[in-house]
Amino acid sequence: MSIKLSHRLNTIASLIGPQPAQIWDCCCDHGLLGAELLNHGHQVHFVDVVPEIMQALEVKLQRFFPHVNGQAPNWFVHCADVARLPLIQHPTQLPIVVIIAGIGGELMCELLQALQPIIHQRHTPLSLILCPVNHAYLVRQQVRSMPLLVTDELLIEENRRFYEIMQLNTLHGKPITATGDSIWQAQPANISDTTTVVTSTAKRYQQKLLDHYQRRLIGAEKTADQNAIKHLNEVIAAYQGLNLSR
Ligand SMILES: C[S@@+](CC[C@H](N)C(=O)[O-])C[C@H]1O[C@@H](n2cnc3c(N)ncnc32)[C@H](O)[C@@H]1O
Image 1 (cartoon, rainbow, N blue to C red):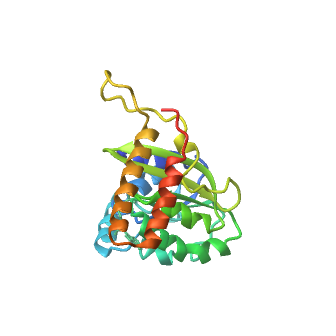
Image 2: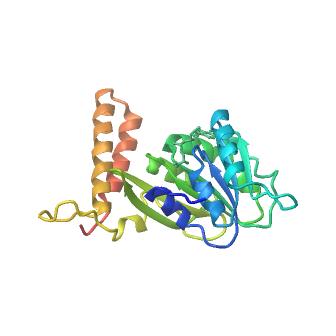
Image 3: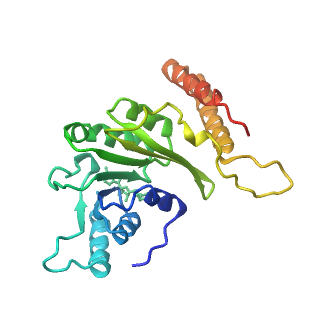
């Protein structure tokens, strides 16, 4: 089945090497990412909490990736809350990759918290790929409290939105930082107007974050919410402290 993925989903797919893996496409919705990974020869577990989505997806998968008699199925459909990921019920010798993409950062933090016991009790390495639609700072704070290390992180821009993609591992990598590390280094710039100085994706993302948190700070000051003021000042200082060349 030929699949046209968005830049964001394509970037996520490209982080997964050719070695067959057991992939958990969490909050899968349309299932396009998982379907592309099936094309690449991985075993894919599709997980979403909405029954109608999973019924429609199962029909499509049966059509385009029919289970062959006598062969172990290479895809599974789970209509489930990712907070209760049935990972333990599918023991495997394959490397495990859990992908959570396309949901808000706050929900992602809740799901990561709920997944802590599963991540702790694994004796084999487990990778996670996270791509929240916002609140990457919160997600990074959550990851910092967990036994997870960063192996790669990317910043992409799609339809005028910015996405951080974090690849994490239970065994190897570097501790995650509050604002990200390599995402702020040279990124391809989006040249829309050749007469103006080109601003890098990273620089524009930094500005967007600062605008967002400064607006929230004004709101917190209006309601004299001291905890929020303290937190937002910390976040703003962290993003202002990034040293970007352009
Ligand atoms: C916008 S879609 C993301 C689709 C895809 N992952 C992507 O990045 O394009 C978000 C999906 O998350 C699902 N979802 C939200 N909370 C969930 C949860 N706790 N467990 C499983 N699925 C959930 C929703 O039903 C929805 O289909």
